[in-house]
Image (cartoon, rainbow, N blue to C red):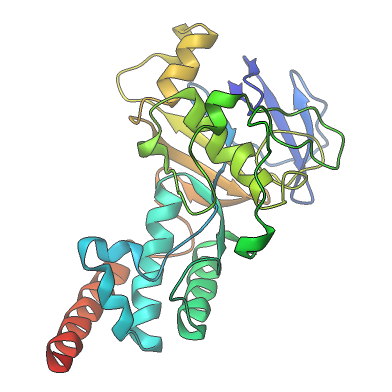
Length: 276
């Protein structure tokens, strides 16, 4: 099943990806010999989430984010790697960075390297002066490719560049819409990512909701299930290339990244204490 940012639900759908972009969405598509298949029966396929301001080099530090002031290239890279893995596990396939206070070249390089290492799509975030939400609050500006995507006032409500929503943080259909086509629009990338539209990048996630038979739900039930905060990522494709398979990242090992992160945190704490 597929759920698009326009609230459309397609049951028994197939998505054809060619050269990294969505080539067709429908049923019983004609495939050429040798086409690789990914069976997502029983899962719900939605657009990959968009993190409009990725603080990969500080977000994993949690309550100790102030430690980011003591980063060098090595610690920034270790923390950002875990941040990238956490983003991917949360269903994020596109990040943007640079439009927040305190970022420096070391952090930006760490974010770029970390994003690349796990396969995330990365865009530079627009400068604060370039972010201009709609004045009437009623809808997202239409993308330049002519597709008719809209976001109602509830979905727009209160969220802007800098507010990341992972799959576990979704609490409503409005959140789901805002974390896909809404965030893409605010970044000026609605013509490229954020929905299952022919010609856009094939950035997709296949979600399971434990204990829920998605096939047995009506359309409203599907929306509520995926926005319940209980969904888990089973597969993720970025430009049609697997980034998560069977719930595990394809391009990076989690345990070594966590070990390097723990060492980096201890180093940052020592630097903080020495500077006190």
